[in-house]
Picture 1 (cartoon, rainbow, N blue to C red):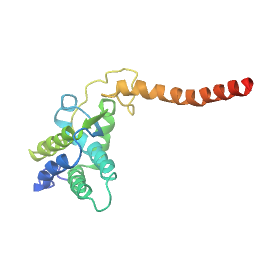
Picture 2 (tube, rainbow, N blue to C red; picture 1 turned 90 degrees about the horizontal axis):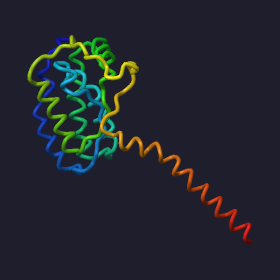
Picture 3 (cartoon, rainbow, N blue to C red; picture 1 turned 135 degrees about the vertical axis):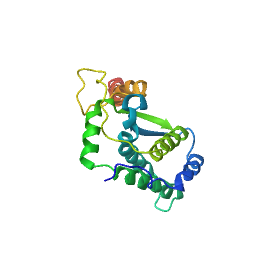
Picture 4 (cartoon, rainbow, N blue to C red; picture 1 turned 60 degrees about the horizontal axis):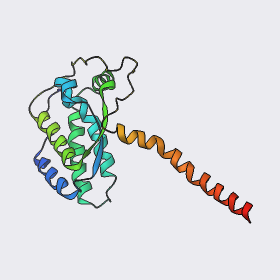
Length: 184
């Protein structure tokens, strides 16, 4: 493993604009990431695998003969090639050390593909090592393996209420049936 970027990035980066046009601009794509300001020079390295996983999920949404799926697979291959330029154990250790800094979020399709372009462009600019030291976790009770909530906190509170609202429907139906039977 040389630890150098370079050859995995090809001219296929231009296919990002095709994907940007083919996927609705208001479609949100989930991704796990570490912001540049947190990861420093390790930003690219720490975001390769989560971005690859996000692209795999996106690719699975398309049919087997879809041109979108084919284009997404090209980017998965690029990211996989970049990932293989690093020692697997070192990369896994670095990701675990930074685990509390990963954020879950959803990006609109245009921003998502711009993010991919940024990662690939930064990767093509030169070498990067895994010797980064993470800043302290924001929450002292947070352990490695837990994820900081990202941009979805408003949605999370709604999703916590949804099961209660769904349980209310059968309960209301039962009350209506009992009232109907009693009145009969």
